[in-house]
Image (tube, rainbow, N blue to C red):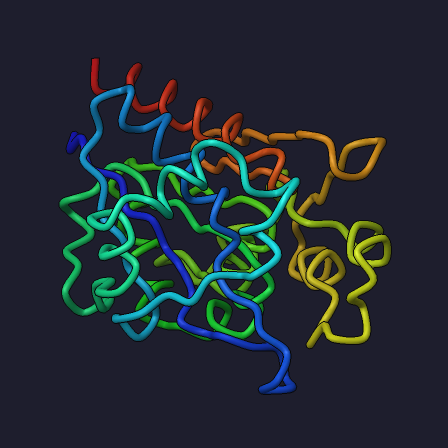
Length: 232
């Protein structure tokens, strides 16, 4: 199996109000990137439209910006990766062992209806690869169907940013939908930690999901472990 991992990021730069910016929650990319790099995986980045992936301003400030975030921001080659992400049609799913959907509220608009991303996820999964997400990244799994027509998440244990966390973050009025509720409507067995904003990862065979930004590293560790065992 390939030793390549595909990260998915958003092209959306704002909430419904164009004056209200959002984007990629950077640490959800940087934490996973570091883990995968330490395990020797080659990594690429794709977005629904290709090109620039805007950054969520709150993810760049204390206490959300940690050492990995600051290091990425200070590294021109890393920043260039987010200026020129690949388009889905440039991606051959056969080249990848896993796909990892990052979060940030922007993905709630960018991911669910992207049929090209759904195709990539389905192909990777059906070839024996891993589909993973963290935080709002699970919105990218909402509408993905397998070749038999069954939803990828139907009957599967998953987690992702909870509605309780949306309330505590004070952003419910900005949300286009309740992602936790939408997962349940699709037959997923949604789980969350007893306390908000603590790390939680759910592994259901080759479906790996993390609840919030605090879960990104642990999610990547689980993915890397599964891949290392399957690749040998």
